[in-house]
Length: 237
Ligand code: 9D3
Image 1 (spheres, rainbow, N blue to C red):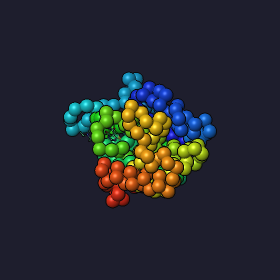
Image 2: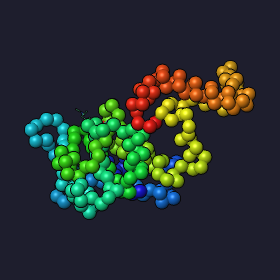
Image 3: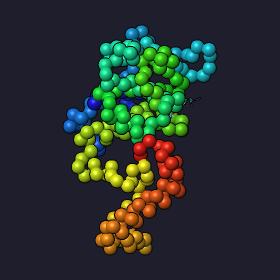
Image 4: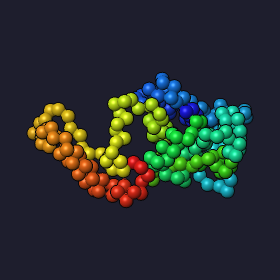
């Protein structure tokens, strides 16, 4: 998969894609990630990326011209009807459809080239949305100051699902009963730490008993903090 991130703050992404699974996936050429400064696609003397909103109001709106130029340059088309198959242009904004595991899996499955446009607080000219964007996505119901942190979240959620991105150690983690539920509690040595004991069940080597205990704990935790997951309202966690 190739990912191109469009942002007015390219420095934000410094080393954020250089760790863990994403770093490994880049080295294995499972994914290529490029960050582009929208300003590089301006053609005017002042390299203007934003302007005042028509109709008035506070703040500035990202201008359409540099974003259209960037998409044209990166994809070779400036109308979503003309994109090659497997091409997605994602606008990250609070108005988007909420990101869920099922959507990340769909992107990992079907996308060869993803361009991510990072919105800002004040907004993006709506003609970008109407003409270029295939998917407008939010990462949740809280206010960010821009799409940049959301881009990191989206890329991370997708890349770890690409074929062979997870090492053999971690791939079994997508297992069995934990699907659609929060995880059970984990412990390691020492068996007693500052008077706090590891649950006896985990120490006695009875694997059927341990699995039963883990199921119960996962269910308890899910019921207490995320009962929506048990109603199947959250897309394949
Ligand atoms: C005044 C109304 N606000 C929209 C609910 C304005 C506004 C807030 C924050 C406009 C843009 C932003 C910047 N946020 C993002 O670009 C963003 C975001 C987010 O704020 N929350 C969750 N997901 C995302 S993805 C991009």
